[in-house]
Image (cartoon, rainbow, N blue to C red; front, side, top):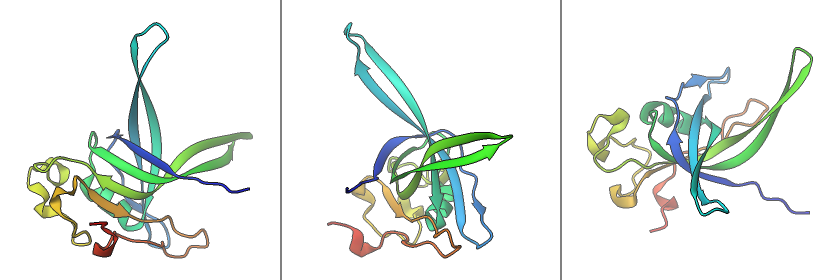
Length: 162
């Protein structure tokens, strides 16, 4: 039987990322994303529901998030679901999270890094896409569990479809 594990989320960051490095030197950061859904109830009333999702970013994507992403910023994440399980005080716990493999910064043209209002001229050198593309695209995979280096990297010019 075939399977498919892809998630695309568009929401607002709930807290500033805290960048850290694992023993192999690979960067990792956890961010929270608030995703809103608006629907009509059976009585015809509109109800807005917010879902909070934990996202883990690895490698260069984590470093870029640590430098450019702030609380409240609009962000698109593409990745996959992963179930973490652990045992604490004899009780089994689990948590579903998203491993972000692609990140797109969605601020307007006038917003600079960390809200400095310096425009898009402050983009990282690894992404040379046009400023009018509507967002900055950064892609990275989580490292192999054997401590290897992460695969993937910042999207190259050849990855831009236009």
